[in-house]
Amino acid sequence: EDEDPKTKRKVQNRAAQRAFRERKERYVKDLEMKIKQIQETHVFTTHQLFRENQHLRSVVYRLESENFALK
Image: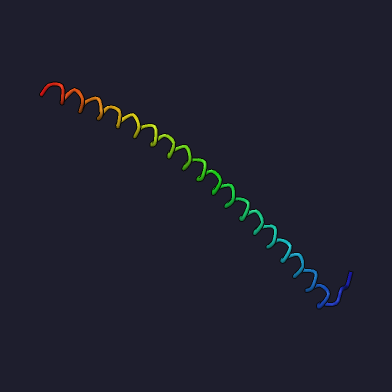
């Protein structure tokens, strides 16, 4: 089929634009997924550190009490 060059170029441009939008959409979705994973890891780690901090505070309190009792 002999299309004129302008029409052929417009078709190519539309295809390139569509491909670009699709790549951009996949990239954004990938970034959103990474953000979600990082946020979940952050929440988990923060909770874990909070529990560890509470435990260590109780250990310190117990040791301070023992130390006071020995004086």
